[in-house]
Image 1 (cartoon, rainbow, N blue to C red):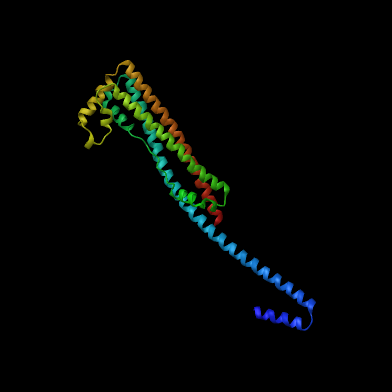
Image 2: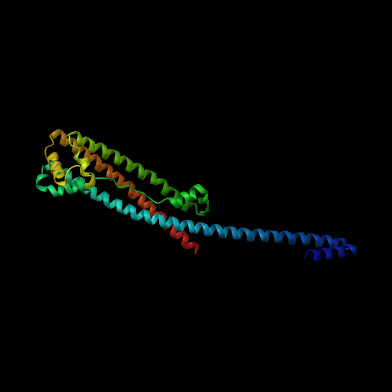
Length: 260
């Protein structure tokens, strides 16, 4: 092809058709430029198509992580409700001195408030995108910000959980200060590591709460109230995170639907 165009130019020069030669040369340059632009356009199109495929793949994976988070959050929200009910039941029995007549219910409620609900979350895909600079693949600024805000809010969820753990630990240690026995901590352990038999432990717990003096009772109720308030706040933070997750899931689904 190059030889063909060169032959035409040589003929025009030999025939002393300079004006036609220059017109032809300009036309040839224009054709070359157009060819380059077309090649660049095709290359850009291929690159955009490849990036779009990467984007959709990442969004599908993030979508799976968000659905896992939703399942986990629903579990924690249900446990929060059970704990709030249990704390309320414990406090009512202490206030009304009705522990002895409702021993099984009291012990069951006390068992329900043991431990903490940790939100693990699934951020592997997001972290991969963040640290590899792939977040820029998400073309929608609204969607990108929604995803970033969701994972940033995880820090608030974890912070609140840590606060609850610290308060719970302090409260249980204060309760144990009222007695020489560490039965509250023992009662929360698996049988293998519980130094007392279950029967003795249960009797100790009932005896302990039944024999609190008025000042100790006030302190115990105050600690339980603080724990309840903290659960309520933790629950609020989790509900907010859950709603952020639902909103982000909808944005991703709507965005992917437009892509298909």
